[in-house]
Image (cartoon, rainbow, N blue to C red; front, side, top):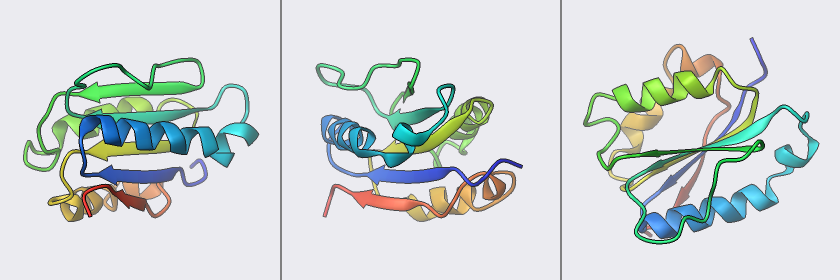
Length: 130
């Protein structure tokens, strides 16, 4: 099993605020500078953008935009499929952004269960709606 993958949950605020916060975190992410050339950062953004896109997929950044809908309220299927696809890649960090922090406990519970409990380090949390 690979070493635990860094995970940051970003919740609340507008779509643009979440994307901007993740863009700043990616710029300052020490894992991205020290990682192997094949490793990259993954970003999963819930919701639809309302303007210019700050984050674009590249060889070092995988960006997945998922239509609005709480991950846990839609059975976690979209999140699980996206995570399973991303975890096949060599990643240094995963940023998971959700519109509302109301259901973060359920999302964290899903991430703490198999098989994700073996993949992720304990999540750091950034709330934009406080």
